[in-house]
Image 1 (cartoon, rainbow, N blue to C red):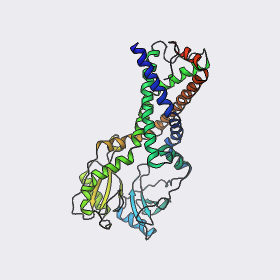
Image 2: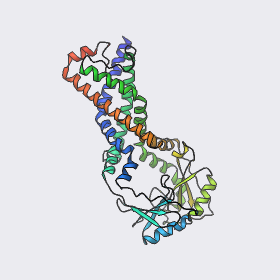
Image 3: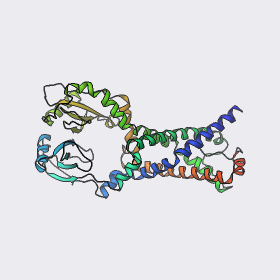
Image 4: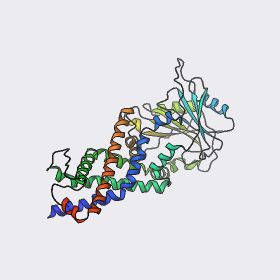
Length: 381
């Protein structure tokens, strides 16, 4: 009796965690499908400037010279970030804004030739179809409350997966793996639901768990800024924004402190909460497959005689940075993206069949419950 009672409890947990989260998970699975190929779609739709293949024999120009060329092309505007893209070697992206505080849709990115310092193109923020899909997937267009809500749905999905495995396992012993019984339409969909569910169990667990972690990105970074950065920057609080010193010198000093790091971006001195009014924030990443997913900030004072500060990244931010590429499957190139997309399609089938099975059970009422009580008719996993 104890085993039967426990199985009934697990079945109820599976049913209700699935039902509560199902519609939102279906929305996330559908919107997540194009987001897996967001880079490829952006190139095809020309939402992102793709520079020509650049072949130069000479070494890259100093970053300071590239920055001066960008400022000369847009005099009076403010430089916010300088970025290097792995997929576009030979270019430097300079993010600029007419105002010191970047406003939505009022900043732009100049794509610069890292060798000739020529402006290759300009990217302006625009809310296209992919941007709306991303916001729906990220926060249901509700900002932080929407993110936290979807995080809760992700946790319910994890609970649904665990309880589904517990419910499905006893009946698996009575059937050969992959069996799809044809005695009735509902029984057929039940077996397909269980089969697809168990095949994608690990993937769903990973994607659901990493998705829940990603929804906490803003609170995590705010907490880190509130705990770690204030003591380091307390002496400069309220100071006017300083004139940036040499970027090349700052990069050289950071590379001396982190010899195995690879340069990803530089945040210019700013009064906003993503930077410091007196420091260049130089972001570095590792050179291995794992450490390449983890970005490390370093603070370089505009007075180059002051020692470089390397704030310790806490474990939860490291976990967050590693979860992002794992969630979208974009750390293994196009082949892994295709695998992620196929698994996403299977996930959509699992969600739809689960909803169908529940509706069918409610419509058929007691007769369906009596049939599913038999050992041969497992409840949906």
